[in-house]
Length: 235
Image 1 (cartoon, rainbow, N blue to C red):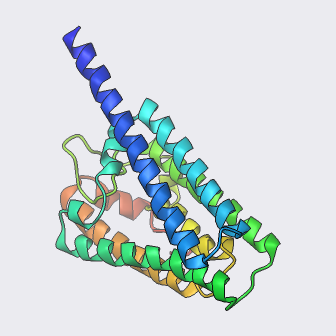
Image 2: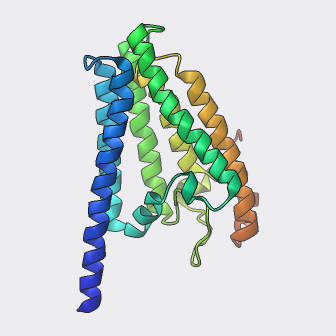
Image 3: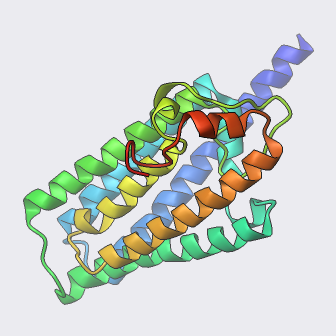
């Protein structure tokens, strides 16, 4: 009975932490969108904010129920949580660029530096949903998909699902979301920043492969079997 009570207590605590984290994230995102935009009359900003919030809530609450271990690992994020110095630097760089991506895109809206057709904005929001769907499938397949690069005691190489096609499907979903974000916000000026973040993701995954090859048994054999990192038949 004591074990059951402890488990229920941990679950309630995790849910509280998750909701606090979700609300904090959405408040920060709203500030990054509407403060630079200088207006609340920004349908692209509202739609992006709503799509992002809905996707994050759906994915998070599903795994709070079905895989709390994954959520606990995902909540330990950011440069300070990384163990490798190289990853601390990469995370700090990408985090700064991610904020700049939203800010510049919304400044673009404010000062009319560029124009994106409404249909393209809507399609970009659809790509963001697709990116979240890819990440969702990755999380279902790989309970060890932490926000930081590490190897747990019971961790094994995952080679099923999307991992049969590319070594880093989670980064595929993330890159898709990043590249779609400026277009969803109605901006072309944000695209170079999205490309820069994608380049940083590539640097991160190469460093991650080096770490996993040295610390995760069977990873080298997996790399020989699945030869492409992000795009099947390309790279």
